[in-house]
Amino acid sequence: MYRQPYHLVEFSAWPLLGSLAILSMPVGLIAYIRMNSPYLLILGLISTAVIATVWWRDVVRESSMQGFHSSQVVYGIKVGVTLFIVSEVCFFFAFFWAYFHSSLTPSYQVGCVWPPIGITTLGTFQVPLLNTTVLLLSGVSITWCHHAIEEKARSEALAGLLVTLLLGVYFLFLQYNEYMETGFSMADSVYGSSFFLATGFHGCHVLVGATFLAVCLLRLWKFHFTMNHHVGFLAAAWYWHFVDVVWLFLYISIYWWGS
Image 1 (tube, rainbow, N blue to C red):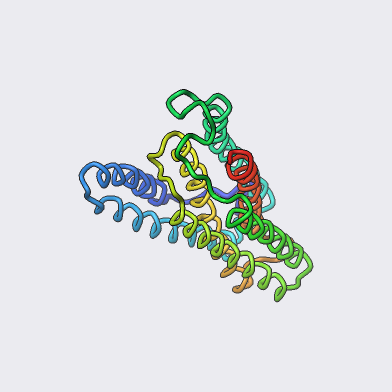
Image 2 (image 1 turned 120 degrees about the vertical axis):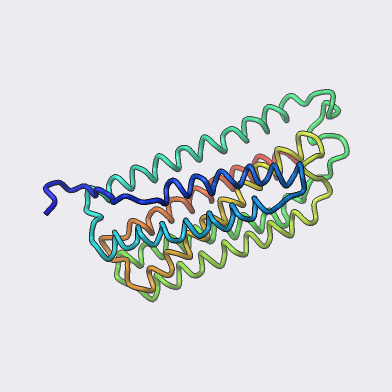
């Protein structure tokens, strides 16, 4: 019997193997760019996905099957998720800083104007506005799911989470089509670099959030969440709301003001 409320995890190989798998992705990307060899990058992507799956499986077993996630452990998880989101805010703050530094004082290399000479920006009130609407609707649907879980309305919770996941996938589809229609590339001055870095990393976060929501949808379908114990869903919902807020800033600063 434990005499303290904390969960002392067992020895696991996933942190070490996961670190090596994640490390192989940027190294593989460099190898792909410099030597046109995609094998290490593909290996890193596949191994990271596999390790994340089995690691997530172990955490689900510890929380839902073995009952190790006490109230104190849940509180620690919430603090950890909050600090993680704060670190993500700092991550995107760097991109916004670079964008405004370049746009507020454009250099002579880009014609002393913003957007730079030769750059045809995307329509503010076309696909970007539709993307904004889609993400805002997904924020409403995931809030609906949260309230349904707390009220024991399982069918409504499943519907709300499924709608959120579909809206996230639709956002990625629209973003991909938008990239295919842009008249500039990442190599076209600082505008192209800052645009594709900021929106591209946001798209990666949407993909991660959609994966998170898909796991929560499966767990909700298997009765893993109760009205008082659904910290896994809370983490996904907080992360998704963060993605929504970041996109609002991206839309206002890059698509609207920056055009």
